[in-house]
Amino acid sequence: MFASVRTYRFSPVYIQEINEKLQDMFIPILEQMEGFISYNWITTPDGQGVGVCVFKDEEGLRESIHLAAEFRRNNFAHIGMTTPDIIIGQVGAHGEVEPQTIPPETLKSDDHPLASH
Image 1 (tube, rainbow, N blue to C red):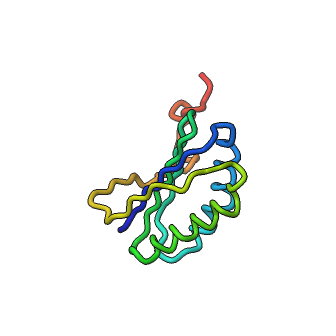
Image 2 (cartoon, rainbow, N blue to C red):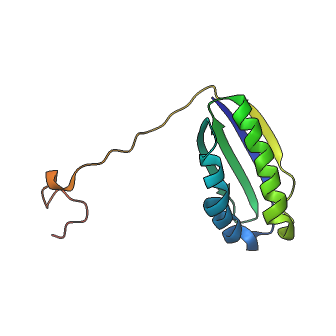
């Protein structure tokens, strides 16, 4: 696996707009790409953002970086988002928890976290 970490700066007044556009417009593009594994966007209250993108191979990752640059130019030029500092590398360690679903019919009412007592 290969990952990139892209660090940006912008005015904090745009955090919600950035979050929404990334969630609604950029992530769906990444999800259609071959080898895509994950994307996370982290913001700080003072206007820093970090995008962490993981792909199965370096080729897909590098393509995603070009798409991110184009997306930034097309969607965030009006907010003055900086050109990012970028780190690219092979993932050396990884951890992940698989979500588990418990069928509702197997829960007794007192076992259910939302059950009223």
